[in-house]
Image (cartoon, rainbow, N blue to C red; front, top):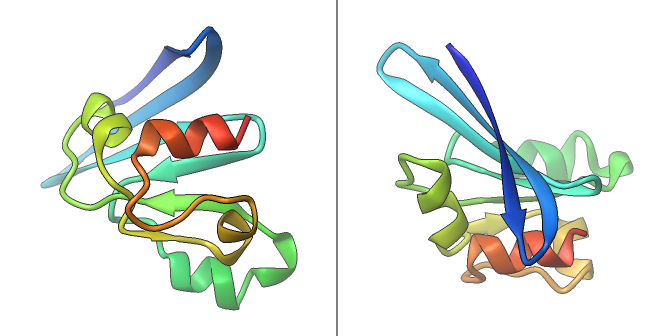
Length: 100
C-alpha cells in the first residue's frame, strides 16, 4: 500500500510518502528541491555514483512514521545537502525548511 500525505511545514506544503512493504515501511518527505528519508536511503550511492545530480537529501534511522521522520535527527546527508547548510544531527523538519 502507498499513502500520500500533504504536510504543512510552517505554512508551506511538503509531501509525505509511506510505502508499506513486507517487514518494513519506506518513509519519505519531499519538497520541490530535496527530500529526507528513512534508513533505506543509500546516501553513499547518491554521493558517489550519482554525484553529478547534486541530490539534496538526508537519512534518519529508526523512524516508523512520517511524524517521527520530521522529528528525528538526520544520521547522514548528501554532500550537496551539506553545501546548503544541512548537516548530520539536524532535525528532519529543519532540514526540509532549508530545502524549500
